[in-house]
Length: 115
Image (cartoon, rainbow, N blue to C red; front, side, top):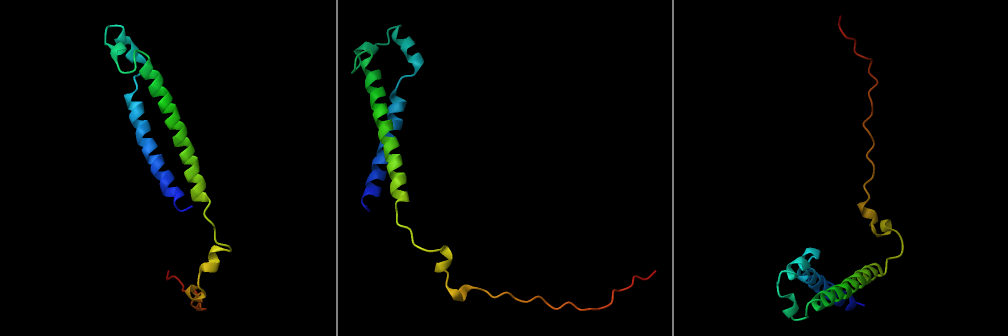
């Protein structure tokens, strides 16, 4: 169980970086207008529409993996055994400070204000 959390965390960080990179590589909705004026998108590595399908599917897969590793990390972090008893059971008895009694109040007559 000790090996799972660092491994899952490293996969989670790698997927997060790859996900950011893939989102930055994708074209926006307005990028198709440039293809109408001869930008040469059909001569790319994936063809005219192949890159959009490949990048969007890869982004969806990485987003799913990111979501699953997030849930897995939350489960692993919460699954650690808890100590039985109260938090106050761990406090040693010597550290408890006794209450100090208040100073006695003098019963002196009220001072009169001169007129």
